[in-house]
Length: 422
Image 1 (cartoon, helix red, strand yellow):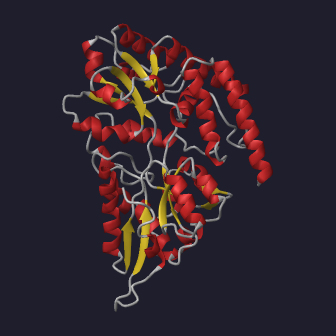
Image 2 (spheres, helix red, strand yellow):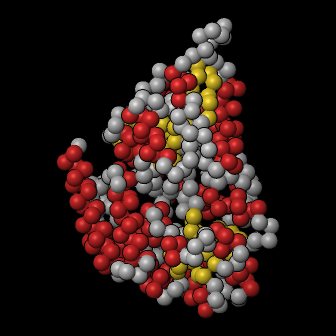
Image 3 (tube, rainbow, N blue to C red):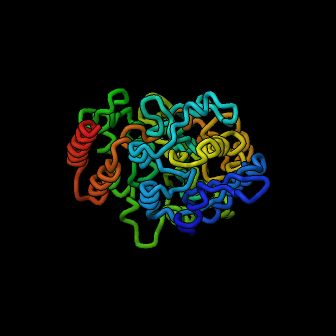
């Protein structure tokens, strides 16, 4: 990976010697080599349409990405345009270093996209007090992947059969994971971060935060506590296995591909890998719903793209941000077997026509009802604190009630502190 330090000095310079003077922008993001190749397609598309603007892609390793970006922003050496994760954007908005985008998007004819084109649930912490500071580059609604061949070989009723009967609920999940466990397999691999945690709680009709006031309510919410107790029991009874307890070097995706595990939870990011594995028979199934509804909202992790408020070429930077996240930019990056789905409507068929997997439509259905990390991510540092506390439950050191109490104490304390600081 290339360091963010390289190329940053280009971000505010123009080729003054050239007769056809070009604006030079730098753009930084994380990504593996395959992802960077896909991102470059949209960069090339923009430069083809805008020959007077040159965009230099400067990848940064994922590990330490946000710390490096913050350092560069503080020193006015940051790229003109950059990715920010859903858990980090709120603290960067507070620095005043992100260019407000609403005015440009609504009133400038150069903008490639309008705010209303984005799925409403995806704004998360990128919209504050009605102002937009980042655009969802794409999105990844949570759902489950299941190993069709494994279910068939073991004679276990498939999640799809339960779903068709309107019975894909916690009881069904317990049934299939018990059978997988008893056959010497792992039933379901649990991850510890807000996407799956919130999805399990919402699946039971529970709430973590009051959507209107932002207050933490899980400790007063019977359905939410019930969902946490279910997770705790599934770990105790070995129906579920925590990623943090897996043998060193073992990852959920590798175990799924080798037929050791029946189900994993993720967004679309496992899809290209599973598709390449020709011996693997798999499909999507929606997150289980433990209410009378066939599905409930799920977490939708997303990354945002923002423009540097200190850029000397702010207009061009905003133009590139809107191109990259527009229908044109997203289609260039996501068509076929990509690792995410669009954050705007109108180009879904570029992915659904691939029929990978068979029930690819489920991930689009989830986008319409899910939510980005809108409240927890607005309190800097809270995401990590919550994960650290839940980690102890998954490791068998705390029970669900203690976990909820500890999370409640920490969340309420940090929310109060944040209010008094602002």
